[in-house]
Structure formats: C-alpha cells, structure tokens
Amino acid sequence: MADRPATAEPVAGGGRLHRVDHSHHGTTATAGTLAWTPTGLGGLPAAGGVAWTVPADSARLDATGRVPLPDTGPVTFSAYVATPPSPPRSLRLTVTTETATGTTLSTHDSNPVTPDPTGTRLTLTLAPPAGAAACRVALTAPSGTAATVTTTGWQVEAGSIATAWSAGGGAAVVLVDSLGVTYPLPGSFATTLTLLEA
Image (cartoon, rainbow, N blue to C red):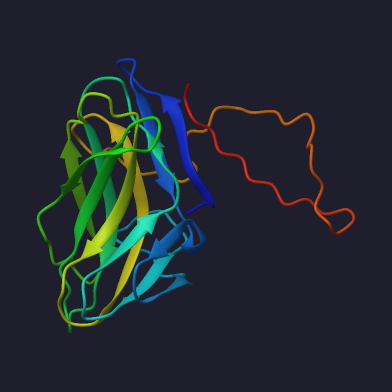
C-alpha cells in the first residue's frame, strides 16, 4: 500500500478507475490505535496492511483525502479486512459523497459483515447523487467487542463490480520539473503530490 490518497487511470468504456492505496499514514482512526503490519490478507499481493486496534465502542477508520467520482454511473468501494476468530468484530464500509466545495451530499453504509480471520473482501456499490464530485471512504466498526482489525487493498472504481486489486495502480505519468519550496534541512525535500481530475 503506497502513501498516496488517490490515483486515476482510463478504463474500458471511457470511465476512470480511482484507486485508494493507504499506509497507516494515509488513514485516521476516530478511536483505537494504528500500526503497519507485514501480514497479508486473502491472497492479496500486498506487503502488509494497517492493523487497527478497535475499542468496544463504535469507531471509524477514515482514508485521508477525497476520491474524484466519475460524471455518471455507479462506483464501487472495496477493501480487504480480517478480524481474529475470537473475538470476532463486525465491520462495514462507508462512503460519503461531496460536492466540489466539500459539502456533504450523502452517506452510504454497507451491511455489517464479520470478516474471516484470513481476510474477506468487503464491497459497497452506490450511485452518487447529482452534483457529487468526490467521495471520502472509511471502514466503520459498530459497537461490539474490542478487537484488532487488519485491512489493506482499498479501492474506489467506476462500475458496479469490484475488479482485481493490483499494486501500484494507475497514476498518470507526471514529470516534476521544479519544486518551489525547499525543506529546511539542506539537501532534503518533503513533497506531496495529489492528482485530481479536472
């Protein structure tokens, strides 16, 4: 999982595929603690994921940043998750759609699912409302028993079916020809680049 909020690439049919790949630095938990884990899930070709220690109260693991939405058609958010067999913890995916200025339009939740300890892929398909320009995605844990949840392979894509996840997916080729600001430590640069469709 890379440290970038979202990337986009053309897909068959003229849509755009928006992939959300996050390390623990790309997520924020409303409660509990986060750490990187080298444990893979469900045969996913990823070198680990985020381990989220969730308290008994309800909590959310929010991805940092907004994902641009296609102009028409459904979108599907999917993520691989696992919880230990004892105690199991039910989880659901949450998508919040927003206007271009960040005003919330709607919130969609999947049905709660108790993932398999070796990994389960959760999916949520929705039709964004008129005026939706972007969305925010999260993994929500309703109240239950405290547990550690492992997650990886988050993606948001055009269409009603979650396609196979693959590492690195889809940024347009970008050439940075200069940096306007230097980092205070000589010879070092701290940069973040976020690509959004216009």
